[in-house]
Length: 135
Image (cartoon, rainbow, N blue to C red; front, side, top):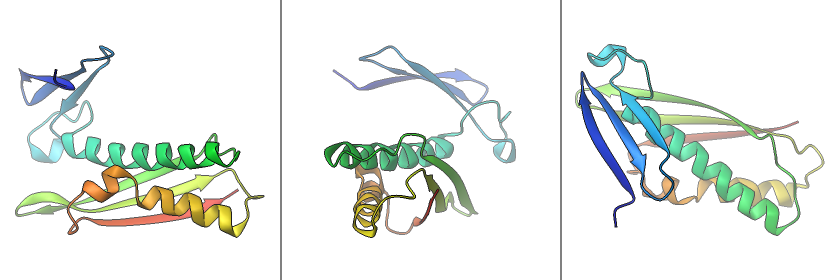
């Protein structure tokens, strides 16, 4: 069975359904590429997937070591090239509520983020710039 079913709705919009849960999301082409920009663009979803994957793997590691990183916040910025149109850089700025984390614990969490499955799946020409601030 497939994981996701996507339907093109017309007017540069799609609706994707997660088959196991029934959760749905919309995509729309961005304003600078003939769209209305009323939903995530497909490349926005790539960036969101990267941030979500990094946070999830950090959470797995945190749970394994009884660390609390709940409330971790990620600001994600993407840079696009025009010809061919593609993502060239994804910048992820993490703010982690963990000022009491040791250097070893921080390094472990940061390594987890940088080696998540999505990060390892993206083409190496897509620069991933990741920063961490602990509060």
